[in-house]
Length: 269
Image (tube, one colour):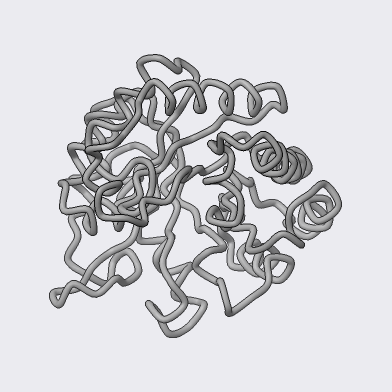
């Protein structure tokens, strides 16, 4: 396993072209690039970031998903085609960065009925994900569905129904989003199992506020042991918001904290 940082943690603090060399300078080994807008999608911007990342391994890319991901499932041919055009740009950027994974949210569950799942059309969802997964594979990138309280995978059970029919789909466990969804993260972990690609981690204090790993009460040792038990050997990427910590140096401290736990349980390989 490897500890890393998502540049989402630096959103509104540093642009990506500043964030990657900064993380590299701090000694972080692995990162996820959070592409923040249309201007950052594409091969050209990906090549700019690749020149600036130094020794950083880029585990994955993550876009501002509401900009086009829901439209990838549209029944309107032009809407869907335009969305796939933006998807291609994100994949070109991933290729330029050497990122093997794409963190994906999918649809937005805006209305109450959609959040309940009562109207979920799984045959249609499966068809959409099969097409998306194959499209990403053709570009050398693996599609990874993340548990997100307001999006496609908003509750335990969704991933397994889609994944059983889409064998190349992988999963991303987000500890923060599991907490928000009020499902124990271990239930998501059990559902994704060996198809878990990587994890977005954060801590929480006694008042329920998000904070950096090592600053709160979350049991990271148990998380690591559970990951080890399922044979997981991917990245644990710290993903918090800009107001969840004070100084940028704290990101490195959080990364070191996770690395110490990985070393303790002989998982730092």
